[in-house]
Length: 189
Ligand code: AMP
Image 1 (cartoon, helix red, strand yellow):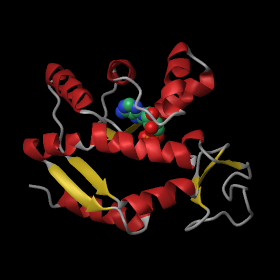
Image 2: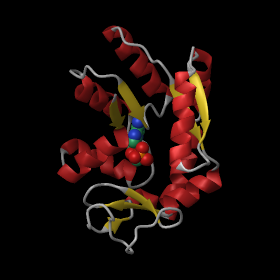
Image 3: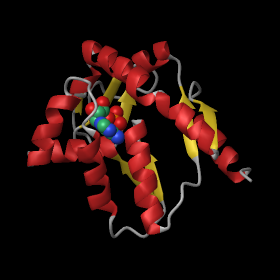
């Protein structure tokens, strides 16, 4: 499957300083969602010729985006096989975001709390320095959580009503969560 992270796509646009990136930066750095129209246009443009199965990560994030995805998919004769909520407690989300470090070279993600690199601030895999994402600052994390509650949480009711909805406890370490999700999908009717 093709992994589509709208956050990664938007950060790449910001790094390129494209017009879209410049517009998105103001939203991302302050913890707000990039407008639906922009995100939907970006997803459709990027994936118009993609023939692999799609694994969306961080998309859709609003009911409007979900509706946009549904109508785009129905026009292409595609369907959503599964929607997975990885459920993590708010204190744990804050801890994970505030201890996250990203490699500036290969993008590998560390946690100063649960998976630090062998040498402080240096990537084990490629030797480049690690950075803290601008939106992982405490005040931006607080805003992102507030935005999640108001704009993204309503999506749960939308997808619960549409079936194919799966929920995994995101509390355990990543490998365990991945195994649980694989089991959910393998046992899916
Ligand atoms: P992420 O990498 O998924 O944590 O996303 C980082 C930031 O990018 C979010 O806080 C939003 O500002 C923006 N973003 C990513 N995906 C979306 C989306 N589907 N809709 C709106 N904004 C998004």
